[in-house]
Image 1: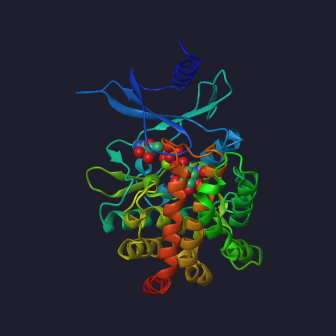
Image 2 (image 1 turned 30 degrees about the vertical axis):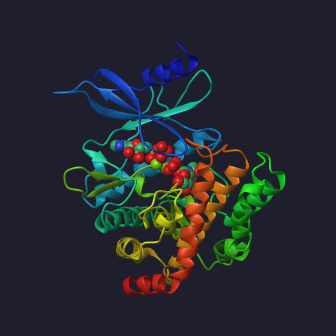
Length: 369
Ligand code: ADP
Ligand code: GN1
Ligand code: MG
């Protein structure tokens, strides 16, 4: 057996699964971890019983700290849901512990694996089929923020330091462009200029945080539409997943990252930029749901800054894709050459669209405050 497969088999054997395992299949469309669906015997056919994931240690340097955050937050969410008499089995993730009571298994190569219960009859969207679906995802993320309002933020580990420090993201881009390791800088000078021309914007939210004008909260930090599970039968949003980046952060980033990914009809890596536009109906649906659920917890300044939050995290994400393109695609998984540059371009196109529609975005926020 190849070492790769030996590791997978050992990880599979490390968790106390109920039922006979019948198959294992790569699963999901994330850019960071390796995800597998674990099938267990069932009638009339095998069913997915669990998710097994290998954490990307290039991204998460302290997997133990990631797992401590996740275990703490999921326990807390369970209690919070119980208090509101809501379904705990589908309202949050349930992680398994290994035979020696650990939340992760380390394989012979030292790579960490964790496993959790698959929420049956559920699925994720990579794109909103309707405004209603996007509204539902806003309620799920807004509710997540509200439920974790009382979580002791000081006990959380900062698993990726400076994750959404946009100033530092721009500095990293500057450095990557100067070093030009992969020899690609000449292919993307307009994109480099686009980012550099917005250096002041990159500092805006961090400056406000440091000045005490924005509060630090427990945030998810990766609020893409495909990180919400929906019920296949009722269509209702069930729970927020992909909890690796839960850290102290800004509510504006959680709001904004959802807009960046979901308030457009286009895929994140769409090469045809004429297809990439900000959809104001989707923007409005998300804003409505987010303010209905998280609104009572937000300060007037946070609410006021929501459109900026959307624009700046979109700029940041474009900067990150561009930096990775310049560095030779070492961070985000890619399936084709130029994919990170395409991803960067969609983000910058959205930034331009948000700049052109900024007054409308502000009006929409006002409507739901
Ligand atoms: P990543 O984005 O890092 O690859 P995720 O944690 O988002 O990893 O999981 C990948 C995909 O697996 C999700 O988009 C979702 O389709 C599916 N998934 C994850 N957890 C569950 C779960 N508990 N129940 C059902 N499906 C899940
Ligand atoms: C990554 O794992 P995934 O695909 O949910 C990334 C996010 C980016 C996103 C862009 C830990 O998220 O920060 O916004 O890709 N996660 C990490 O699609 O860097
Ligand atoms: Mg994900």
